[in-house]
Length: 139
Length: 153
Image 1 (cartoon, one colour):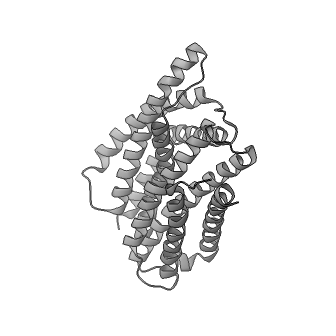
Image 2 (image 1 turned 45 degrees about the vertical axis):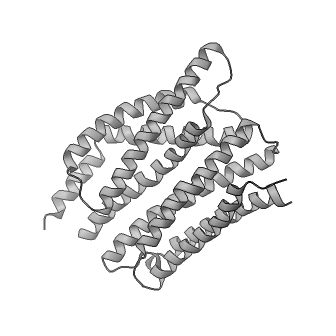
Image 3 (image 1 turned 90 degrees about the vertical axis):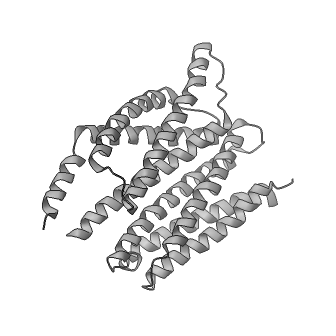
């Protein structure tokens, strides 16, 4: 099966976005200035490219044009919902961290349980996405 | 100095019937939309679309009324993060409601004829993306406003 170029682009770019997310959190964790520009690039990129990809894949899968097992479709849907939740939490926590930084506080450092929970959520979301790619195209 | 009246005023505005109605309608429509997204992808079904459409209509009317009052209070636009997030939230919510109403047209026609609904894929994708961005940026806008007030204490 040939792999659509947009699928390859999305699967690879998700890894770069993940690196960006961890970079933003690490900067704040180590009490260095909040990289708002990097955060903004990540937020816009994720919204414009990868959410668009997810929505298109969802439309294709639900149209019945592709033969995909029901179990895999449920996994797609769960991954989609998890990605939405992870993105939503990243934007909200990033905005709060930026505002806290301006007041001289380091939000992620001050809330370790929340920070690690978010990073775990993000990691599960990314791993599930890469698993979808591998199962769909490489196995 | 002066923060207590601000917080009191905000507390009253957060409990205003129009805003509470808006939250309820947004919550119901968001939950319905997510259920449709999940079911359409997983099983090819679209449960409770009629509820989603009618609540969407009520949401559009309520949001229009709310936004007019909100903008008359907070205008003009200021170069601040909470304003920028509010603007993005308003634009995405408007786009999501408009695409939702356009998507409701083929549903309405198919409802009368009993034929399966053929939603335009691009419009459907824009509606899905918009709804996800609405939840994200409404949350971020509210978080930014409340956190700004918290920082003033």
